Image 1 (cartoon, protein in one colour):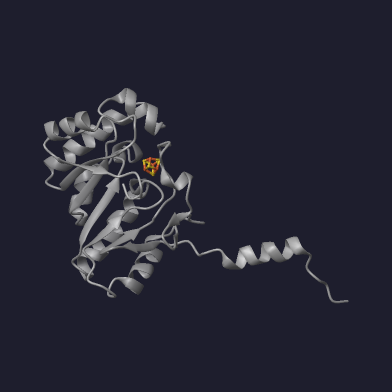
Image 2: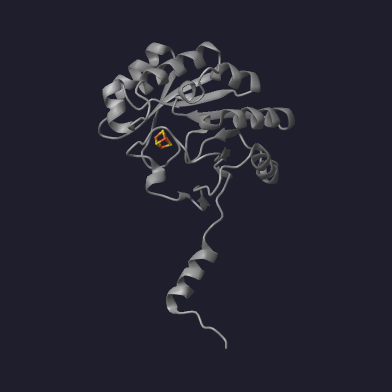
Length: 223
Ligand code: SF4
């Protein structure tokens, strides 16, 4: 006897078939972005991934963390479609959760495409990769730039808004920025515009370290 789906089953199956495949590689403007993890040691209350599944048409909620091979295969499909300005490690998570993958993919991009490579990070790479010289390894692999989310002028504010897992996260963010600058990476500190943050004080802090400061409007998740 032929079975008929009830209404709920039909709706579920429709939802299933229309769900977008997660994107490892996505693009906005002239930049190509790599979404390599959904993990992060922070739990910022303003984090875009808490409220959205992605950006524009791209679903950034990964079902599995991709391997370097998978990232490179996805990159190969689009990297020659446009003269992209930069290849940026930035997605729904903290890229430095996957340092080895960043190093491998960066080496590949530099060897075959000579593109500028940037890592957008929360600056906790040394906490996530104990015993490694993260900045030096990034530099040696060919990373050109780092954008570091500072978001606060002191530890108290940082802990309040970013809710870090690591007790000394704020100190490590500052240390990361200093090391990146010292190693000669193009380094920018950034902050979202939310009521709790004092942008003037964050700017002063960034400039006292000697790096550029950029404000990110709280409308997109790209920070
Ligand atoms: S550091 Fe970035 S990815 Fe992590 S919770 Fe905060 S906004 Fe989200």
